[in-house]
Image (cartoon, rainbow, N blue to C red):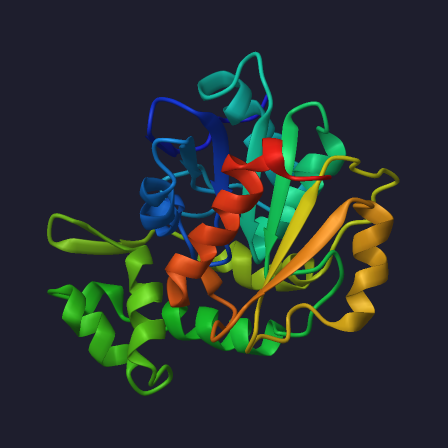
Length: 266
């Protein structure tokens, strides 16, 4: 038995879709996309362990995260039927492991800008996590104070704004919703992909950002090995955060693959 994860539901009719966010993210990052998919699809936005309002755990494990998602989905969203699953980056790896470990739960899978392999962005994420951990929370009187402290190490205002969504105010005190210590310690696990002796035989859509290098030609063999019914879409103009950088194209790709899947030749 694992603790159920924090979720938010959008929509009440149509096929069911579960959204899984990436590192530093929260389920609410997909609010715009989920609303745009109505009324054909209803969505469950999940906060993964050590993120958002979900429980903290003492280590990062893709198997544990996938099992927690499976139990939460069965308990709160789809007790008797399959769901579509959309996962971005770290959440994309959770989605892949979920499909491989719980194939009876997943109908169609969408993996956004990540591959079932190791990636080498640990230095970047180590820098971001270290910068957040260095913020003097006790000295904050407002959120803007944290933004000011982060301008030096993280000059990009969009990146700072995304990261600061993890800062929670409780009265006059501030705390990080993300478990920075564990995420930083286990970055090597987050960057890796577990070895799983299984395949997922339902249709899978890979959505890549044109300006991102998280999915490379050398990853295709591993994709096909785990997911033999794979197709690919590249979103023009998008980097790694496809759903926020090119939201209309992202929703269009989801709609064609999920809402219109009955017309889609597998």
